[in-house]
Image 1: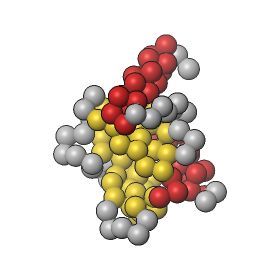
Image 2: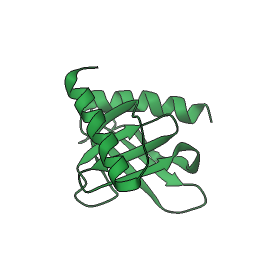
Image 3: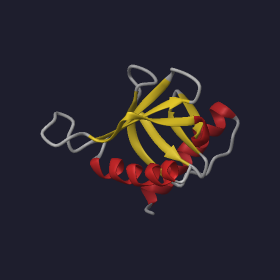
Length: 123
């Protein structure tokens, strides 16, 4: 992990603590957009049991156990406008509400895909 990654982890930890009062130690992060607001621009971070969407205006987290992946999951198909990027749709259990995460880089999306697949295949 480089100096930049450490600085981002510290900033993510600081924003989550500031906005939610929870101390979280991220194990992974990637820059992302999200459907939680029209102009979301921030970071997607994972800890051992939850996913977090964080930017300088707020932090929102959800436990993996309360989420169900939707069909809107994985890499955009080849020859489509979004390729080679990824998108990850989530729906809250027992609810019709949810959100989608759009990593800004293909490498960040690929790593997030691996990590999320491990989480949701083991549940």
